[in-house]
Length: 267
Image (cartoon, rainbow, N blue to C red; front, side, top):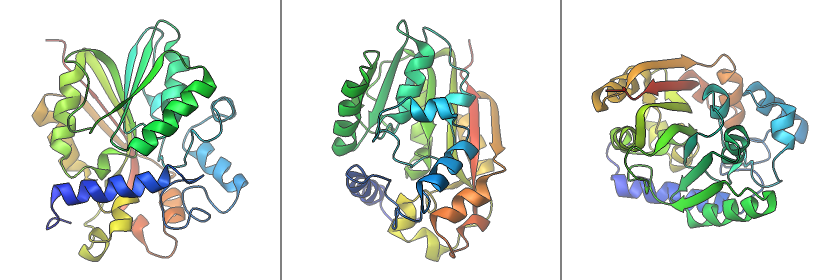
């Protein structure tokens, strides 16, 4: 992983998620046995475990939820009517549409994704939803196509771990947030040293394993770029969730799903 050029990593992820945009259930090697589980019942069960309600799951058009997440960032974000929300790596638009309902007509949601195929899918879903307060922009999360100090809340679901330049992600997130703005992220973090043979597998890079960063390093990066009130909470359901992604590989020993929160100071 460390020997791989950042641009190569980014291209691997872009290509894998372009393929995922055309699948009913994500980018992991065997969609029937990974993020979506082996049946609709298992898929719904895992979504409930991650914090999505029946109302949320049933209130979004089919094809928006690609089963690529590891939590519910809209739940931890405590979104309020009228707020402007930015989703890093918005995929098919699922979390954007949930956020749009919470911020209402006076609020706005911006989804950013680097994969044109995902963007096309999300925009099609937005048309089906009639989501007038949601827009999707092409861009990389290290270089956000968003103005300085223009966003109230940043959400992201199992995406930042994919970036080979996480400090740049957090620095640009800090830039676009308003003073007092909040970062509320669900992501995969490393809880033990990930073996090189796992880090070097492209499918595990796309699958939110190989790029996971240690908790202490994430906290340091957030503090370095200026965030305060940093909180990282490992999720109790993580072992079950991660083991579903790659059965028999033991990856659940090295990574965990986590809620990551931080605030941009008012000053």
